[in-house]
Length: 366
Image (tube, rainbow, N blue to C red; front, side, top):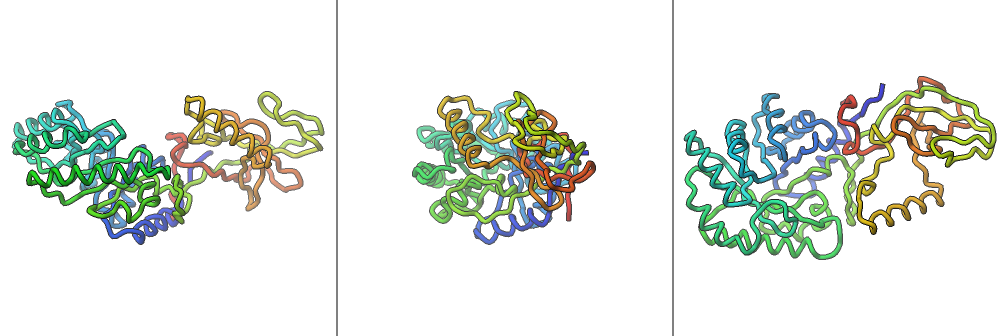
């Protein structure tokens, strides 16, 4: 049976590494089913290790956490003008995101109707263009939001659009955000939480974007699989474990897999392992991009790796074995020539939890 194994020691190492790198409060982002590691598990792990606030993008995730009797602050990382969602924010005791006057009015009206004060963070749009007030709206927003009696604006934040790149944009967005915060403070707002850095910005920009901030948002950092141009020193978290189904002897000239792209140059022994694209194996972050430039870059990168004989591989019994032929939907063939690999042996594949099939069993090892 395939399962995804999370070594808790590696997760704890990453959390400690991040704590040592900042004096700011850490907001634990657990969106996307806890970045593939399991929503409830990751949220509970973080809170048990001192993370005070977690953040999600969907109210359904907040519901799952409350169903687990988790009473820590939950920040909803999106703005919503929908009355029914405002009601859920109140019922689940979430900290709301306010990114438009409409969302603020709807939330304030819902809070007033229940005579319940609600906490919120104001979202500033510095270029991602999803949620938030743009620079030209900040002054009016500050004046209008001051009038709302049932919302406690405890925080303000933004999200960088290209923190992975070394192009200066992140620092320019940071300055835009600082100006927006100053405008709100000029109108009398006082924020206990001010945050802008996600994981890539946290490692790439560091102290350059920490002045005036009180918190950082960490999400992909938990997995240790972060796109940065600065070293981060995190450990990759998570591997797929699967059992070898069959070991086959093949002769020279035998083609393996779809399209016969691999031809045995000598007698070989191949192991068949029941993992593939369906499980997240062989899926890369850029493979689903549709613009021509990215597709060309991806194909060139793959060709270079192939020419350098950098094939995908798995580990069996402490040894590494290369995949031969295409990765299938649910199976791969692995070259185990001159080994004692046999059916029933366990194969381990390094796969980001973000790409692992959500229905695959998660196994947490302490």
